[in-house]
View (cartoon, rainbow, N blue to C red):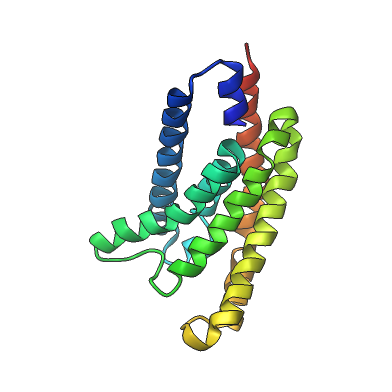
Length: 190
């Protein structure tokens, strides 16, 4: 979506990279800050319920496209882990970090695969977010199942987390497409 906007505005390649990098950094900063806010307001279990890191990553995928979205998905949990580790309370937890990096990479990549379709029709944001959420969560469960013997995570525990986060995914299935639709409308305004 952003790529098509920049092409329509005849933005040069170097400036395109700068804009995409700035948007990516903003999304990663939001993905690191939003969980902190949710934990302050909703307590320790708030992150598992509301999945605050997922919304910015989904938004980044829809706006930035597949490649940049994939990078945002992989790096957001890593950035959050680095910042929060320096503050003494790492989030996500180290045991969960590689799984979450893979899961959010899938979230952003799948949403990003719809970016051009979203640019044509804002309504494509709904299937983008839904498919990204289902696929990302499935990948998370599958990876835990494969690595359960060497991980502290179990499929049963992860399945419980998926169920706990269902309300957050429902909220995001509505909120993220609404934000994407508003951004698209702004980008298409002449």
